[in-house]
Image 1 (tube, helix red, strand yellow):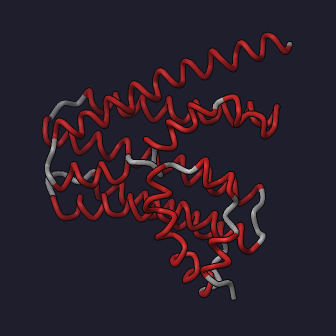
Image 2: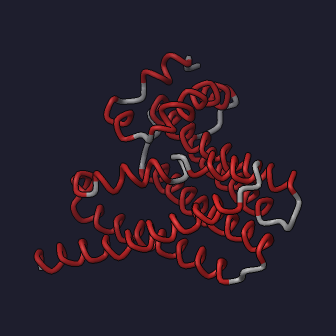
Length: 230
C-alpha cells in the first residue's frame, strides 16, 4: 500500500510549476490524504475521474435550483469537492504507474462536464434572482466557446505533441488560475453564501469575455499555423 509520502513524491516538479496558485495552496495538500484513502479502497484513477464528473453534475443540478439557499450551497460545496477529486485522480495515476491515454481521456471529459455544470449553474443562479433570461444564452455561448477551444487545442496537440504546451504557456497559466481548479470554484461558493449578485454577474461576464475572446484568438492562432504548415 502506498504512503502519503510516496504520493507526494510522485508529483514531478514540472507539474507543480504548471499547477494554479489555488491548487498549490489548498487543493493539492488536501488531495494527498484523500488519494491515500481512496487507494486503500482500491479505486482506479479513472473511476475517481468518473465519480468527480458525477459529483460536479450533482453540484450543477443543486446550484440551478430556484431560491433554495441550503441546497444551492451544497451544490457549491460539491463544485469544490470536484476540484479536489480532479487532483486526486492524477495523484493516484502517478503513484500507481497507471497514467495513460484512457486516464487522460477520463480526466478531460470530467473537466468538460465540470465547466458546463458551473457555467450553467451560475447562469441559473442569476436567472432565478433577476428573471433575466439572456443570461442563459450568455452562459450557453461561454460553455460552447470553452469546449471549442479545448477541442481545437487537443487536435493541435495531437499534431505537434507536447510542444503544444509551450506555445500556449501564458494562456494555460491564466486559464489554470481562473478555471475549475483555480479560483472559480471557491469564488462561486463565497458569492453564493454572501448572496453577492454583482459578484456572480462578474463571474459570468469574466468567463464570457475570457473564453469567448480566447476561443477566437486560439482559432485564429491555430488557423495561421495550419496555413503556414500546409
